[in-house]
Image (cartoon, rainbow over all chains, first blue to last red; front, side, top):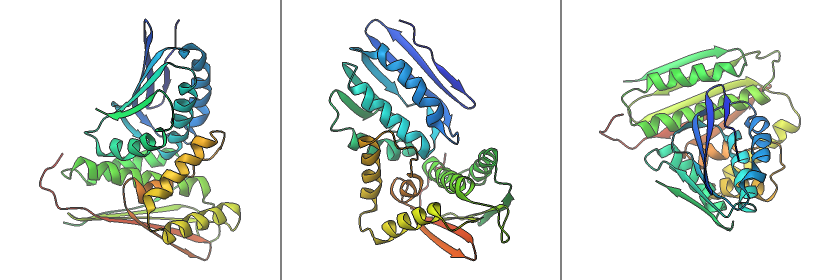
Length: 120
Length: 162
């Protein structure tokens, strides 16, 4: 099943769909005034295609995100956890900003079944 | 050596990227983490100023000031503000921040609220992010319909540069 990526000004999401695994990679800088406007409908459209899949969300190449990007991320991880068989969220632990930003997300995601948030 | 930037900008979203780039350039040679954290703080303060600030008799622009030496960074963002729900919400958040002994928890609490109710339209995370994620000190002055935000941090002395 084809899942399209997403491209905006300085920011891109690429999706690799292989067998039962779907890798969602973030690139660039998410710095729009209202990222939810773009991200929420995109992810809502994607959700039905993630049912029973192993989902990997890769932020390691993301260069920057503003605080308005965080709610769509949390919303997607939560929705995904109710649909996918497993979700692994990876951030780049060599980048201090990513560790600082994703550690709190890791903490609030602890209660979600099938979700692992880890620095690599 | 002290480096400083002082810019008056028209409150347009596109101006934020330019200022972030100027901050980055002025910090060349410092550890990457310090640069990324400072850029994040500049971005959050400017985003708030542009989203919630207004043009009034006292100010029609957003003033941005930045100072850095080898161990301390200071960012100052000034904009016009109107009395109303946005200002009330801001004062509530700042009161919570000032009263809290565990500022990291404030950010986690807000993330949990978003997790519990993902339909919330506003993130309201920027100020918590500044004091929690990147651990800057955050203060404000409110005078004659001008809001001034002041974020400061003392960096640990490090030898490695990016």
